[in-house]
Image (tube, rainbow, N blue to C red; front, side, top):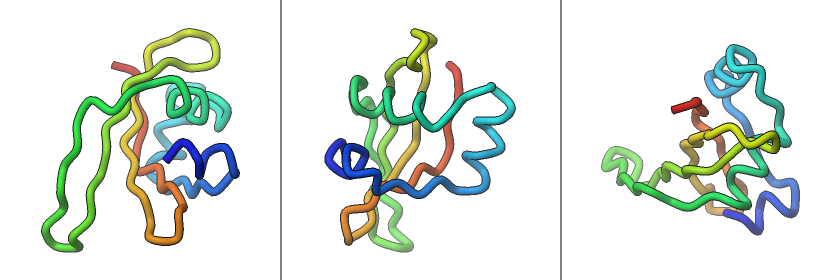
Length: 85
């Protein structure tokens, strides 16, 4: 996941973009949280046989941030949602 962030291979869902706007977050905040945070949970979606990950990190400005993301088979990270805990 970090590799895809470093390569700018990220897709942000509409839901995540709304959450980012509500909390005044930018894409750089999401990148920073993934690059410096840690995975705190992994859940398997049985319907599509994929995992999604909850990553706890901080924004570029130091605020706590959680990101829910999944990996696509072609090494892209999909940001499902973000929130300030």
